[in-house]
Amino acid sequence: LEFYNDVYSLLDEEGIMATQATQADWALDADGYVIIAKTLRQSRFPIVRMYTQYIPSFGQWGFALASRRYDPLRMCKEDIKDVIADVKTNTYNEEIHFALFALPPWLVQDMENTQVINTIDKPVIIKEY
View 1 (cartoon, rainbow, N blue to C red):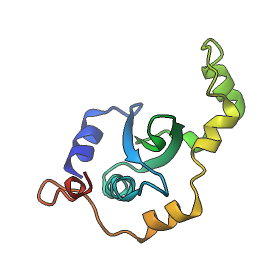
View 2 (spheres, rainbow, N blue to C red):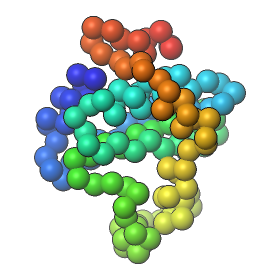
View 3 (spheres, rainbow, N blue to C red):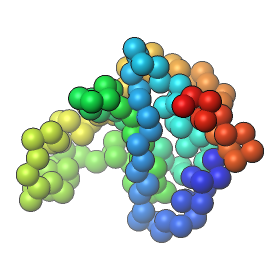
View 4 (cartoon, rainbow, N blue to C red):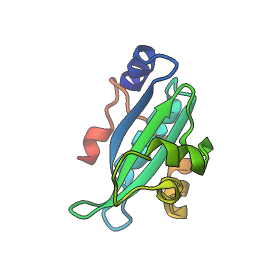
């Protein structure tokens, strides 16, 4: 928790924090992802969005974005097209952007039900790994 609050303090109004957030896979367990999600949501960041992407060597992998101002779900498709217009990519477009944030119901439920957050005094994430 303290780390994310420190990052919040260092970012200006335009800043966005992005982090990988461990596996978010039904078969491999997602407890670490759920703890990271809960911890970020308890931080000073007003906007926290969790997302996943299939990584061939890891399975369904979790990531997070946190911001004071920008919500990736409030972008319109045209804005996304403009941002990536000069970027050649085979794995990302305006449709994929929104699909990344569509989490499965079991994962949303786990994130809503957990009360566990990671702090300096209680580093519970260590138990997961």
